[in-house]
Amino acid sequence: MLRVTLNGEDRAIAAPASVAGLLADLALDLRKVAVERNEEIVPRSLYNEVFLAPGDRLEIVHFIGGG
Image (cartoon, rainbow, N blue to C red; front, side, top):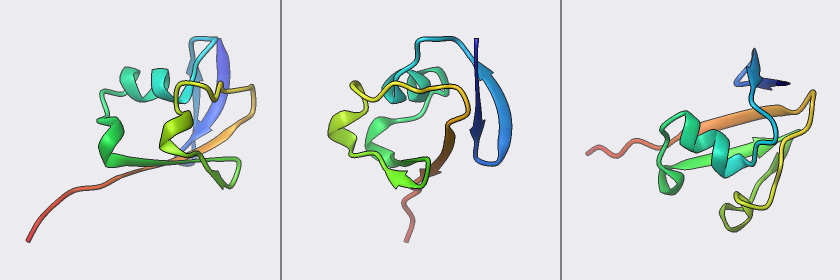
């Protein structure tokens, strides 16, 4: 297990975990979120390549359409 902070809450996740894997576990649509890891935006093109480490601080913003 790997401990990270996700949107301000301490969370244990299975390791190894990529950003894409975490989003899949959270059932979030990759096309509708933005991810910040340790105060740096993770480019969507790198979600499969960026692996999480113990103590990472993640902020995930989910976009919702409306009018």
